[in-house]
Length: 296
Image (cartoon, rainbow, N blue to C red; front, side):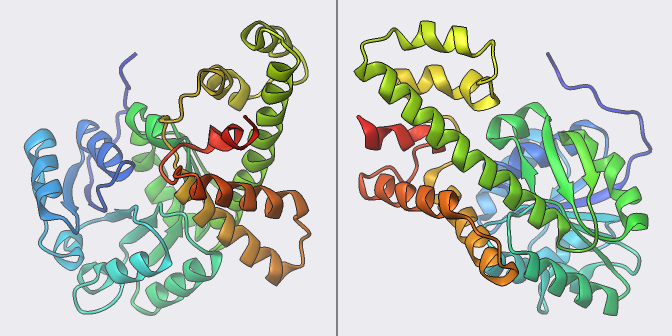
């Protein structure tokens, strides 16, 4: 079913970072009627996006951000984020006072607080807004967005971000969005390992695991991972989006934050090492359900 968009007044927006997530997210903003300027480090990708969706491409984050009411970004990590936000060519240098920067990168809570403070000094607002839902969620406009920051700024950004989302929720002050994404990744890591062990056990026991999942998926064991990745894990298919390399980056953020706040994460730390095993098997770009490869 095609995505439908809420009828809101069009805004001048920018989108920085046209990777597997950012490219379709920016596309939904254009389809919703917003005036979109994009920036990507690889210029040809930005030109491709403009050819597909219209709008225009900026030659730098600063150029793309000029005149925008809201600047969205989705890049790789803390350092990538700083590179598109700060400096003479960064977005903050081009943004008008009162504009809102919405960061969809999965990054640290510390960098969110840092950039929020810098933004406030310049009369700007910064919302940390990591997403869950993967590439298919971005393509279908059905992402879940976890936000931290100022409530007034959030109220400006939220209806626009709904163009590529099914839920956009403010969870607290700056950094709260990133912390919530860490909670999400902790939960997923444990679920995928448990599902991997269950399938591998059933296979060694000689069970028809498709039939078994069909039964237990109607009971207390049911989860999104079981419904969506269980059948593909049985088939040995691991090209469904969120890569092992990305998960290890996210779990690294989780474990660093746990050192700071004193949380005990024995299962998460163990699963992180299991993902390191998958990387050593050549599975850096396999999706996260490839944990089962270790058990076969």
